Length: 317
Length: 269
Image (cartoon, rainbow over all chains, first blue to last red):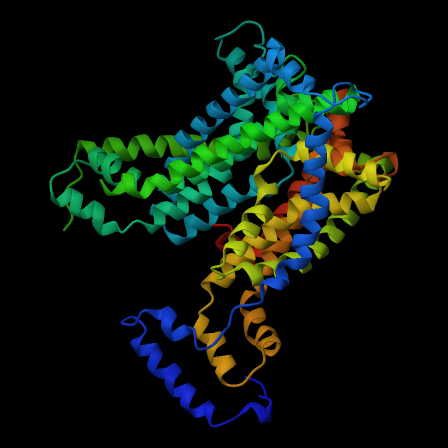
């Protein structure tokens, strides 16, 4: 430690080091907050002010403006009205776009969970050197450009891609399958792109479990499957909901992967917003789609958060 | 007490092991495929490549459009990172450990850009800048990117501050150090590596951002991921494979450096 301003060294100095030292031993026994109140080590909430202002001007105001624009009846924004929302909610095409976006999100999340949970489980059981390799494999896709990851899937799923050439070499098919621009291709690509977001919270949740719990379960005669399904999985529910929330939201809004792998035939919400707002320059309708989409995503977040809050209770029963 | 593995244990381990293996293949295959295709000697994205050569990498040296876009992306990402760290660390200090309601509300507002659709925010920001008469420029890009990148800095910094033993700060305060002195000599050295990791995440996410850039850029501020996206949509150019190869190499190198300097993998969990 460096120098301490001498004028602040008072009689209080000695007394408080003693207090701090004794507290270290007593801490586990005491209810900490009472003792801690003596020194205010927290920072002033005012430090958040610059960012709060920044968000107010450049995040909240634009979103409110977006809502305001969506309340206009015509693209020229001359007349107010709920016409854009009425148009969206009565148009079968728009509703189908919203529906298929939400459904694809569910499919991607389910695939990520089914494949990601075992990987997290493997990670927690691995020795140190293997963990380093595994974490690198998990993190690399998270940090490489989305374009790069999506581009790989074009190569894999293309007419002359790996899947088709393998299937043809095995004699299973005669003509290349159309995998690119198909829903199943898109689900796999989105699952790969967002897998790390599922695996990382699961690793955290799994490594927090006390291993003696499974030992106890085994000692009481439960089989491995029963222990896994009744002990391990319920104890990681919070991690499962956290992972599902991230994967679901991210796969709903993954514009690039959706548009490159899904192609023109499959319009999903982000592409719909872009098409209306940027290509057709219809700001009010584009804004209305954005608002509907924001509300849908927020609803999903709320559902997952509620489930996550219930999770510890579920685990205890 | 170790029991002999029974059928249940074996079948559970086998099932989970096979699924984990499938997941590992799913995670690694795309990167390997891109790297292999980028060294192709042919002119299409055929896999496996008919032969190997470096000529697509050589072609990058005079792909001025891509270089210009990469330079723009780098510039915007650097400014975004700086702004995100300054604003984000200050906000994290204020929010972390605070039990106030205002802190909780601010926290969820600051985190919301992570979850909300980027494209919707991009459109909102475009409408906003059009209204206040600020033309799209690198400045609007930096502002938009900061909104979506600052959550990374905040999240990682708050995590580090929560793990910080408060008795260290209390001892410093009780020894008479001022709050600023404690921040510089105690807090900052302890959370510095986390801030570095957060800055790295913010940089990567800005460099890779498309949804916000899509609305806030113009021809003068072409961004690398958008350039690549448009090239891919129009002509499935093999040059993009070479760019991808370069990006993967840089990402991997930065990741290893960050792992050494900042323990990146620990910060992300």
